Picture 1 (tube, each protein chain N blue to C red):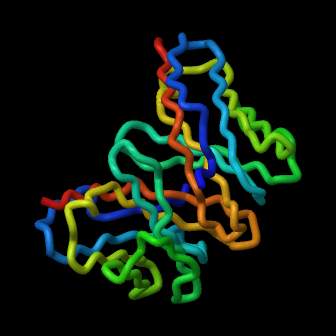
Picture 2 (cartoon, chains in turn brown, blue; picture 1 turned 180 degrees about the horizontal axis):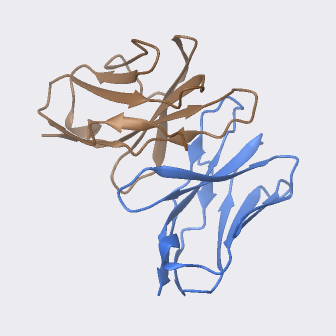
Length: 115
Length: 111
């Protein structure tokens, strides 16, 4: 069964450094998403992406964040200058369609630790 | 506002018993989804119920949706130890695939 994959599974970085989290969505899916989950808290929406541009973004997704689909398979989340509060599990998701069925399928996550 | 807010229960049940958890939300929705998360792992999609559906089954899962009460329930029948996980409901209040998750219900199934 096709699945969303994410690399790395765990990333440790120092405050102020740039990180890039990578995702490979399910191949025939058209919509891509990033969510994050701070330890012990809810899963929060960050951004959705379609047709090479951002569809929606939350208030969390400020200028420090960017997303890109550099080729036909990868979808990346970049944090330019990490802060301690960026420590979280970051989940990539994809869905086939926008109008439905629109189940979102999530990857296993990247645990980002900012020290 | 909090969308997809589950009843903040931690359930501990014996294998073979049924587990029921609830979710309430505040605004109109197009659909509601349930996900499972094993400890430290990703979210696994379980079932999606559309706003015009009242009940949906998938294997040992039964989901109900009451849009008049803005609530949903997830029933797991004949639970197994492998069902031990956190269960989240998620709504799509803006109809834009921007899922809003609840805090999750932790279920422990004792073998």
